[in-house]
Image (cartoon, rainbow, N blue to C red; front, side, top):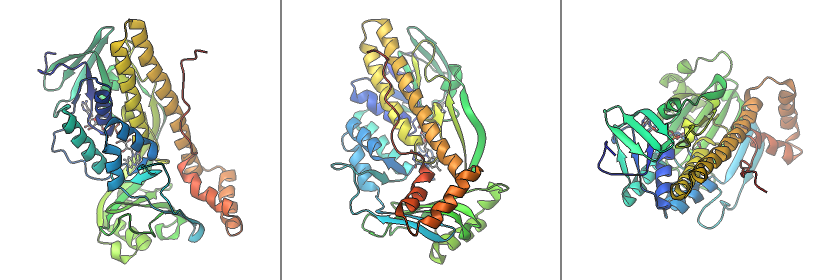
Length: 411
Ligand SMILES: Cc1cc2nc3c(=O)[nH]c(=O)nc-3n(C[C@H](O)[C@H](O)[C@H](O)COP(=O)(O)OP(=O)(O)OC[C@H]3O[C@@H](n4cnc5c(N)ncnc54)[C@H](O)[C@@H]3O)c2cc1C
């Protein structure tokens, strides 16, 4: 490699949660790797993004680096109660007496992404994987024999495989000629974190609250989720909203006071407007089967069901698995096949996740009169039939279940 003394067979672009997981997953399979990251080591990643980490993700992280999954479980919390209101009236309330899951890993944990990333960074330092900070990938040229990468600092790198985990604006995706396809219309949310140092697992009354058409938010849907150290407040914009205006500190303080109570009005930690798309790359690999896309470089999802980081971590694990086999393959055809199988599996998973998040989006924001009527009928019936309230509680997150497993089609 001409760019750096370390000579690694796989480079990863991006030190977000997906790139870091890719590096951990490669190392766990005995493959040396290094990360090229555009930003400096002391970058500010504050402003919590993913908080809901699925049990399957925690198990993957634990498998890749012993202690990583359980550390996140220790840092995070599991809320025991799911509660839903409909225009001010409670329609569902259920408390669980156990966090579910199996062994040390619960059904989920609620932990800010910045904490997850910190543990990933520590795990990488532990095993000695280099992160080259301020090393922005600027061009990528693949051939049947490997990949030539140039970084903005003028360095050149040769590697056998490159994983593009460089986020939604991915240079790697553009360089391999892959394009985002799907619904390009932007939807907006206002998201705030509200500090509450008293929050931890010892609060048996912790709840995740979804409020349809909340009067306190002038008829907008509101989601309130606890995590260690605070609350995540999501307010879904409605037609005619100006998200920037609604997210001004003054207006947000009013929302927080009205929704959570006066005592929280001064605890706003971070506010942001979040615009999301529902798109995926038309190919997760390049023509030479040497460059693989993972995480938001490959797909952008609506936030319902918390599939963004969770599915990106699954991409990372499968990309590493494919590359580990491909590197040891005795024929070029087998190596290509492994990479193609990665693409088939993860493209199918992304389609499934897009569809699931899309169903939730349509349910929440669509104008289909049947859906609107079903919601109203369910809210009426919730007093008599728990199943009606449970449907209202469940639907904002899309269908349950994981993407199908895709095989090569061999019998
Ligand atoms: C408000 C909010 C709430 C969310 N909640 C959840 C949730 O509860 N659960 C969930 O699963 N997901 C959630 N998500 C989604 C989750 O945050 C993302 O899916 C996740 O961060 C994607 O990780 P990534 O590593 O693919 O990309 P990123 O986190 O964007 O990381 C990409 C990295 O690549 C670097 N980079 C960019 N360009 C280059 C380049 N050319 N060369 C080198 N490096 C480069 C960037 O600096 C960055 O470090 C949420 C997102 C938001 C905004």
